[in-house]
Length: 263
Length: 263
Image (cartoon, rainbow over the protein chains, first blue to last red):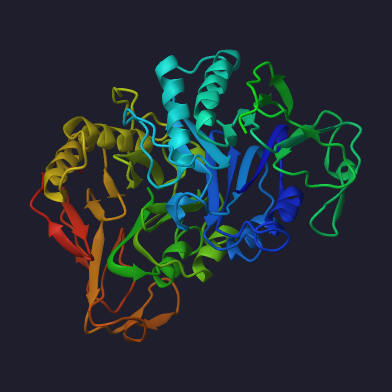
């Protein structure tokens, strides 16, 4: 299994604090040491830092922790390999272009033996179940909509396709196009929306606090989504199993779709 | 105009020495300060470091210069913006998946007013002429071959498509799938093949030398391709205008296609 971290905001925000704690779980406070990756949207552009080294000791992770990239949407992933060897092409997040936008995806869980029939429009480069599932999600979106539709139109297509994929195993994931963030929970996924009045947060994985009041304005709103809560003094919401939330501008805009628990 | 740097090898090689010199041209020894990017293939996987800051002073470039990533194929680009503003989605190299492989592309030159009709299979995310031309090249490949063909079959399709694109302006480019490297010259593109017996090279852009004998075995072969030669004591070959070379394993495997000079 792996761990996921996502951020969706209404104003470009850096994720240094959350990533500082999260990255410790890659070989230090937890066992997810088979590579890691993080994708930042800056406008329509997207850059991904990744490494097959554990995030707790990777020099690239060190750069990311100290380099304030302000982004509306971020997905990070630390990997404990199950399906697919430890190599760069099997490292999350994965990226593809659809409708002239970058789409970024990371998965936590196992879809053992998952071998969907793909049209070829999106083909996996690596050998993970995760990248195959990502291709299936994008195929479903493209087949349903020749042009980019509204978030409300996309939501059921993503949810229903995810529900089908989840029949084959455990399918927690984060999916973003730089504006929307889909967060589906199969077993473990939590989120918090930070907004005015901001307070002090204390990381769980190391002795570090931040007073968000110093870095925010009253209009800022930031949703952070993680497999397990990253802080110990805030109230995180557990996403119900089988449910898929859609975030935009730092808040949940769609949450109606919940299938039965898939594990 | 921009500058290009490519490497194609028969054994994974780091590009630190060449990139050290090349990156100085991004705001220090030359004027290409509107962002930069570098893509490394590691197996089938590919990671791109990029920044809108000048490469001569970017903290991400500093990491790349000091971090020995061993790769068979690398493309780097430093930008002097002409078509398209300075932002991440307009930063080269560009990446797309075709036939389950990552394809990476960077362009030097201007294709003013270039507005090709695209099928939609590959759509530009940013607003550069370069990304549009990349989409055209990939569309031509996909239209010609449902599955990945031999290098010899691909070569004329890339060359002829490039020749058509070049009717609209200046089209120097590098294109790789992690195995093959296409290098097309419109105005300026040079290359060198380093092989046994290796010798000492002296960078042009700063006072730095390397003795390749210390880092190589007699079987190694490394082709380096750059807009302008990077070293002052080696003999670089200028690619003829209008010509497209195909490299594999550190050597030229196809060079028959030369159109008339397009500028």
